[in-house]
Amino acid sequence: MNKESAAALKGKKKLILQNWMENQLKDAALRDDLMSVAELQQQSEEFLTTLLKAFSSNQATDTESEGYEAIQDILNEISITRARQGFSPRETSSYVLSLKEVLSNVLEDRFREEPAVLYKEILSMHKIMDSLSLVTMETYIKGREEVILRQTNEMSEISTPVIRVWEGILALPIIGTLDSARTQVVMEALLQEIVATGSRIAILDISGVPTVDSLVAQHLIKTVSAARLMGAECIISGIRAEIAQTIVHLGIDLTNIHTKASLASALKMSFAMLGIQVSRAAQSQEGSKQTFGF
Amino acid sequence: MERIPILKMGPFLLVTIQVDLYDRLALTLENDLINMVSKTEAKGVLIDISAVSIVDSFMGRILGNIASMSKIMDATTVVVGMQPAVAITLVELGLTLSGVYTALDVEQGMELLRDKIGHLEKDEEGLYDSFI
Image 1 (cartoon, each protein chain N blue to C red):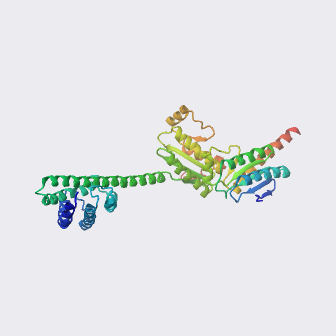
Image 2 (cartoon, each protein chain N blue to C red):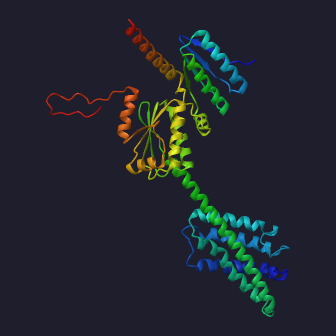
């Protein structure tokens, strides 16, 4: 892009902004529910000012050059906020692309007499705008990925509650597939809770785990050993038939670990280990009134 | 030189480690403790490591050693108060201290020791009974 066209564009800044805004407001993809017109106007003006400044820099065609640093920053901010606000990818990238048409019109007016120059200038302008639109897309995806990552982390923390089912007995219902990162969260949560409550028995219920492979089994064994090192015993409950088959076929040794079919029987086993006796309350002699409870 | 105090409580020895163990200190402790077991004919050793935040494989091995040595000398070893981070580290290092009894705190550790000793004494009584 040469100095002449940069100057021409700068001179027509007001017109460009006006036309661009018109284009954007006309567009069916306008999301006035997510962003007010005034906000859009302000954002667009800031963007255009910085862009025109970049056009008049020495290396106007190189979007990686110093002159474009400010514009890259603005674009990053715009697309990250848009990703969070819930704009679609098309809406986000069309924001930059919609400026192309307006800029082309201005260049056409300026170089009407010199088609060769016009062609070259429009080509280089398109190149710059395309590259900026790619930057927008890249940042948009990055912003979305951050959102997804945060949600993944939250999910793995929320889905592993440590429950105190009795004095001295903790239960940890595990739901979903166990991977290394989640096992770490599970293990830490369990061990912290053991210290906090002074519990001597922890029941790991895996009825909500769809598959157990050798890695998951290894993680479970690690958790059990860590708890044992701290002085608490672990019972694994809720092993389904398919999982028992897989475990035996994989040759995983669980003989040193207490296992029970259901959470209820694991609880019963914990009672036995702690010497707790649970019995039905004495029923009234008439049999008319029944009391339920432990 | 820094030393870790070993307290005698009835038939048991109580060791509370309040500082992070470095190798030399750990070796001294192992030595002192075994001598003390032989001198007092203790029935049990209770090691409280609740204040220890860093454990390496060497320290893990020392704990294992103390347990096996005490066992030879007829004393039961219980390690109490291991921090979650320490437990995770030891497991990741592949040290599960299989010969060592563990408990959550000193109180439960003492209870466990009394339990173990109780069993032993009962067994011995039984033995004597059958002799008589």
